[in-house]
Image (cartoon, rainbow, N blue to C red; front, side, top):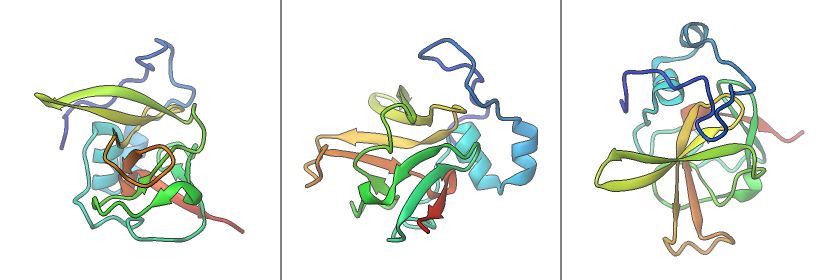
Length: 150
């Protein structure tokens, strides 16, 4: 577990409340403990165990807390890191990026849902992946719901 405190209700970049206000107690009663820990306490699932790690189903990945569309299967690739990896979010404003110093002195870039502020994972750059952005958006399966394309 990353933190015992729940994530803030205000976007730290804009200073304004998130568009979707997640009721943490309600969400906790609806989700399994790991999903809640990841989404609201910035935890992580164990590598290579996530439901979407190897899936190749075509569709859109949504935030499990608020339903916002975050990633598309077209940008998903197999990085071998143990988590679903994407080379870009669905849209530039679908997520927010924050500096994460929880593993200091290592600094990472945290990825959160822009609509509700839920923790999704981290993005890494310059690792030499043969993808258009040279970025690996490493996202926890338990933070996502895959809506297959009809």
